[in-house]
Image (tube, rainbow, N blue to C red):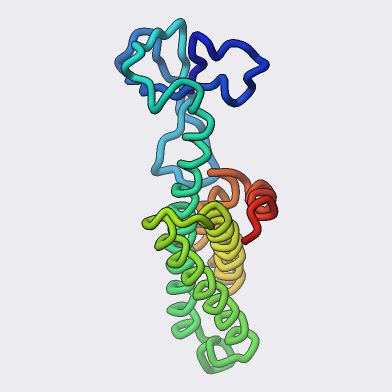
Length: 215
């Protein structure tokens, strides 16, 4: 994002912002050191530095002053992708927890035979399925660019990421001490799930978006 020549007037606020395509090969573009993160370590994250970067006018996205609006419209779609990411993480955690519950034995039988564990797995599966249906509905709305996409995209992202955090945490709990070790994948899934509650707007922000766009 950058400000256009006529977008420097602060009185224009968001309408003074224009969007541009910036290539990493452009003079003045550089990157910071990789961040040391809690999760999603397979996706490198760095700061981007723009030092006196000059971009030609033909790299502008849309028209002058529409950069902020472009960013907000883009979020309507990308939030659905975060919901899908959360679904995948949660599904992996549930699958592993189910397998462990069938194999791990206590008092002469699989722990999956105990009602307390069954209730945990049932709740995990219920939350996952609810998140899946909401995400699929939001995905269809994203494809069609429906008028209620802003609400539904925020709702899917918020609900699915909250569900993923709960499901992965329960998976760690179900595995007990093993779940807390790196020998099993659920601790990584729990760490990976956390970022889905944060990026593309925190889930507190999603609730603000939903409240402002109630259908």
